[in-house]
Amino acid sequence: MNMKRTALFALLLVVAGAAHAFTLPRNTPYYCYYYDQNGTYIGEGSSTFAIGGNASLQRGIEYYTFNNVSDNRKVTFAKPVDVAGGTRWEFTINPSGPQCKNTDVYAYSINFANCTDGHTRFCWLF
Image (cartoon, rainbow, N blue to C red; front, side):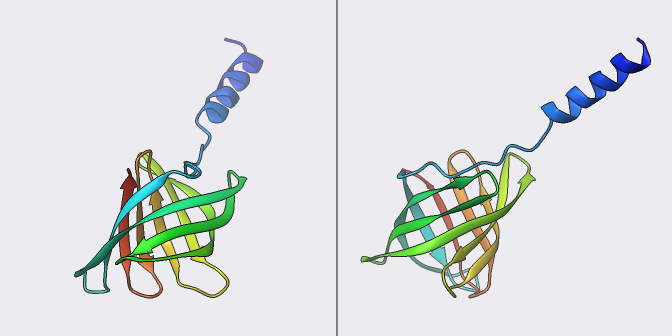
């Protein structure tokens, strides 16, 4: 192979292996378990994300129910990084709510961890 073909082949491999962030399915309900800072189960509920944006920033509303109380809140998913089988995001409840720096999004689940309020939750698609 000549030098130009080798360089082109290497570039194609890099582009083919580029990160493709998992984004959240819009308006799809998730079932969630919530835990306190000690890992003790504190309740369950559901969340639906009505969000939009691009591959590096997703913003919108989370409609959620926790222990039979329903509400909605502004949320942001930012700074995606590939992890094994999914994408890690920084999740923030806006304007000044807690942030979960290790929010791992997979094809069928979301794991909210390393949250500034000490809580965690694990959600999966209904």
